[in-house]
Length: 338
Length: 281
Image (cartoon, rainbow over the protein chains, first blue to last red):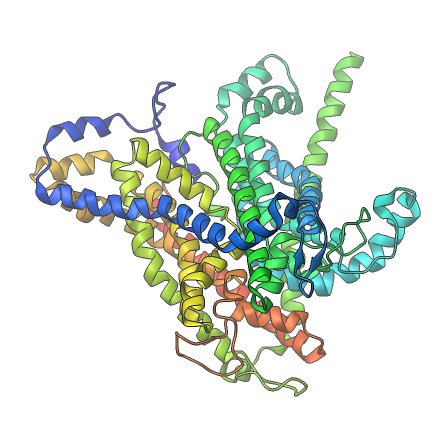
């Protein structure tokens, strides 16, 4: 129901923050006495908990990662030995696997999610809008471990029987599709991730497209554009920034997703070009090895992996939010679908 | 003439493509739900809810301990997270027009995308590490941290929906601002706020990653919050990745139960909002 404020707020003049102008009026109506000030102070403390939280997370990860940071320096990010016995750690395979699986997921998810958003806002009969939007929301509510279970027992056998053989036959000459299919693989991880991020991208894109003024469409149609031309030339360009934001938001999700990926990606410290081979992600490494980390340096290396992952997702999310805010300023877009 | 034909053909093709791809995306939900019901429903009986797990290799057993554990862990998380989240949300709605409001809003939005496994590390550092054993409380703290930014944003939205005339009327009658805020504004938005809390709770109830090295899991029935405790998502993870057929059967059943739990909470949440704000949309 995030779209409510977007539709409900009376159109504010451009450039002013998206708050009703009555706000400032009543603030000046009366002064504040002591209890009012106390109330504001209490609420401020609660609000400050959020910035504090992000600093605490950063602090915890950084102090935990300090021994590994001192020992390996920046080469941690591009060496690929991960040997708890010899106490040598390099995170390159995980960083590679995280990026590769997320990009593969985006490649699959973006066309699907944008289609859903365009369908829901532009083409769908009115009667279908609510049910389809609801189905997409439900998809976002499925716990990650359920996706993982489904991936192990349904998706991987399906890929093995019906997808990989034809892929090999047709595209086998490309290095991406060579080698033995292990079941647990980069391909399986990417597909699971794609299914998981479609609802996020679709929900946010839908709200971005809903924020596009109807006059945009009407103008294009009045100029004699076909329905698709109106979408392509008037609606999509208007919401472009927000749509890119939605996609980046999906990327942020994919980067940090843990359980479903851990269950199907194979968890092998290895960099390979083939989608059929097992891989590893940063989140999966923490999930698998954290409670088994026996030495301080091992644990510290995992903290550093967490630090890299956290900083990466914060940066990606920050970029996404700024882009989305430029279209729908200050609205908690997509929060319903979280 | 020919050109117009091409343009209309293109429009048809793209419309068809968009509809087809949307269909594929929606299909995923029905595939997953269908598989869950197909493979899980047959294993669900009374014993599944009332019995604990049996040793590996034996047939039968249930998830009573996991359901109880999930209830306790998530309940504690809500106890910690809900007041902070609602407080922050009220701040954003009441005083959030300044620079601090912008910062808090931005941080909340960024935090909702933080990987939950990283939050698990924070829970581990503050509770598991000092006392040197795993504990359900650490899991609750991690889940609460996940909940706070979501609740803050939904609360803000719901409070913002309250008409300003209501606030002005209360102030005009001489009500102090803090009482207006709590008794008039927040009270009016209560349905929406409750919905936000339910959605947040439903979401963290399905989280596995932050519990892996905090609550850890426990094969026995345990209600002590300072000890390892089983949770439904953890049990599904162990069963699904385990080697036994029997475990896989139980994993499907447990996944169906978890899914049902999350769906029911989400549906209740939706229903509450619809009843209250249905006319706005």
